[in-house]
Structures are given as structure tokens and as C-alpha cells.
Length: 72
Image 1 (cartoon, helix red, strand yellow):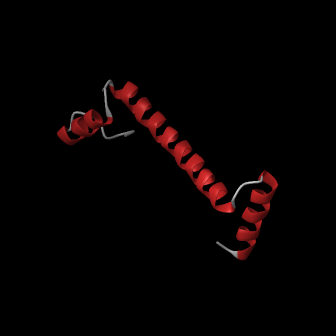
Image 2: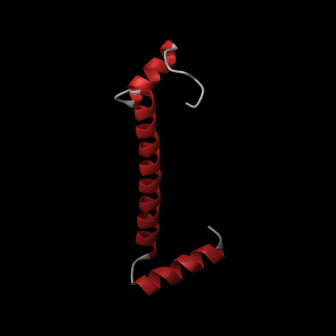
Image 3: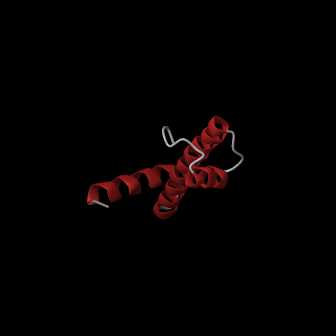
């Protein structure tokens, strides 16, 4: 992190009355959870589109050649 970024995190942490490390940890957790939700939504859309029950079934059908490659 740059000096400016460290300063900004410290200022925000001070305003929120939390430890800077805890702020960074919580921020990273929030970001990763958002990304996980995005991926889970994408998997769910593919399950509906290709009438499969799981990501594993998508992979299996793709490997067998019974799942169209276009759009996957």
C-alpha cells in the first residue's frame, strides 16, 4: 500500500472508531463475499439455462461434449 493509502485507511478507521487492520479485514471480507455472490449467481444462471443441477454436472456435460460450448 502506498503512504497515501495507509493514511486514508487510518483516517477512515479513526472516523469509524475501529482498528485499521480490522477495517481492512472487514473490507476484504465484504469484497470477497460480493464476488462469491456474483459467481454463485452466474453458476445458477447456467444451471437454469442448461437444465443441470450443479456446477459439477455442467463440467461433466461440457467434458462429454453434450453441453454446447457457445455461451458457456
